Length: 350
Image (cartoon, rainbow, N blue to C red; front, side):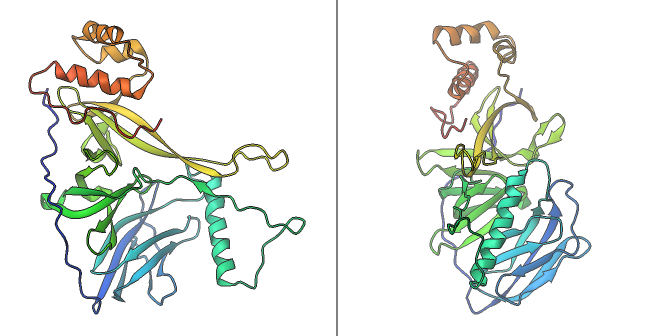
């Protein structure tokens, strides 16, 4: 079985020169349905508090030209979909690529997400028209509900090397963070602190230096692999390489508030909770690591008894994620040429 040898990137973190602020630039992209991936025609694309705007065409595309170099808030609205907003800074022509909008009532969004978006719109209205006042109960304004957590895999900025699909171009000199929900990387140029975005579908793999542990972490695009015969959107972290690689995908789950106003019990705020799902790789096919003991040992073909003895003799608790990492590290070490990527499992979200 061929070994997983994906990364040959080197950290050379170089600076980028910025484009003159006196120039005008072009902003483009395409708007699509998150679930069906169909193009959305007639979506309103604006840069808030400016005259720059466009409507998407039949292919979902938009182009706004002659924009002054500056920082803007991009807003995309269309009936039946949640409003999309993103902060951008234009220092060059910027193609945002596909932008996915979520329909009201789509699976996985939850009523709480819709209410939060509507609350945001109301808050903006109150800011823009301060003569309006909100409803109060007995003269006391209710405490606004908040969203705890975020959609970032790591909300810290990490120095990175990025390998693009196109021409296998390597991008250096950026600090990055990854938005799990939108499958988008935010890039900060090291010297100017200018932030741009790059859709995940353009990136083949990325290695970043973890800001907390000071060790490299390796991520590959799920489009290069298949689960049940279908490529997967999003990125997987490679934890163990070798004969049977171990990979991890982090997902973000939106949990609605369960606060009972009358009884004053429960969680008042909505939450974004991150969970890890572990996979092993055979050729290009991904399989979830089994949770049941017997099924788990069966994947180590020909060495089931040896692996079970390793677990028992070291009193390893298989209910813990760190145990899976130990198990795969030991198994792959039984084959020639094994080199560990890391000596401990980092950043566990369970």
